[in-house]
Length: 424
Image 1 (cartoon, rainbow, N blue to C red):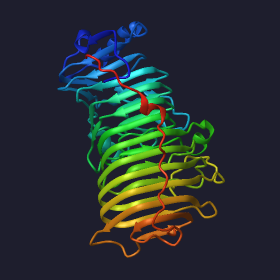
Image 2 (cartoon, rainbow, N blue to C red):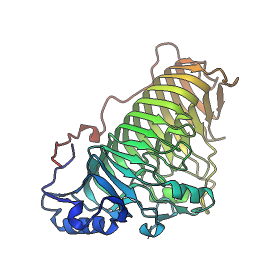
Image 3 (tube, rainbow, N blue to C red):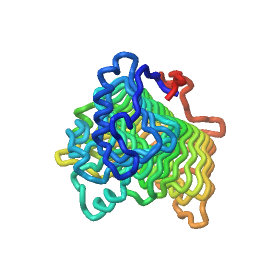
Image 4 (cartoon, one colour):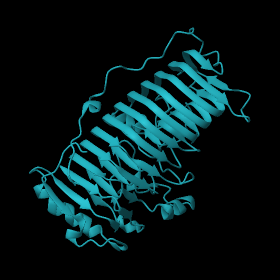
């Protein structure tokens, strides 16, 4: 199922690729896409990756293009650093960085899909070097990164052991990420699952993530870089997510949120052995906003925190503006259950810049045997609650037994897109 089917097709082996897991196929991938690109405007092109283990370094996608990874096929990421060129800094971040394994910029109509084929990042060597002090000022390769593009679909594949983040659409419009299974060791560094970043009209659904970092992290740039770029993440729908992340969040919002994050709908989420459900992260110096966030129907087991908001996330680039205050408001949670919870809520706003409009309704949290005595730690926040157990802090008073927090009834535009059934 794809946004668009393709008129022209080729198989990776047509370009001399060898699927033995040892031979480099970087040239074959790059040659294949270069050969197909002139045909792309005539009904689109598709590159089929057949069963086998296809070792490759970084390669760039093209428009009106499908990368189809067949069942039994694995794209193996090279562990040779020179296979990943250094590329320009992202305008909303400013960090030096390697190219991702699969990369594209200024594209339209791109599909990365398959029938449960795999992309294996072989990240262990990158993690080891990072832990020993390497890559301090350089972002390690991601598995998939697409910039300044529209009409993007990533679906029906497995991603394992990324060197860093797995999927990063940034400055994109009209994005579908669907039926993705992501796995990395729970102690692997910065292996975020899916990070929509300064994107508009994005749907993430039916995904499963086990990670050493946030399963999903919603972003929009950091401090002065994000403020200047001014590209928010907006119109984002996340549904039917399953997440395991003992040291991070099911869904993080921030801490890079300086371009703004608004109109996010999150529903039907299962969290297991995860540090927190939705964690909002920001700080003085971020500027920007997080507002109009709506979450419902969460089922959680073995949680350190359920609700977590942080106003003092101390990670800043040189030259940030300490007067840039973030705006956090209209955050809605409803219809949630949690078992074996250590701390119900840690909600830390910013002095003289409180987080406001927090709403929680119909939430039941069953505490663990080793639970903390202080279940609600609230400072510089304001809001209301209804039918929440254990009883909330005094800054979130009860508004009686009938109030429900809002969840929008309309759809974002991408939710109405009908995918076509295509023949690989």
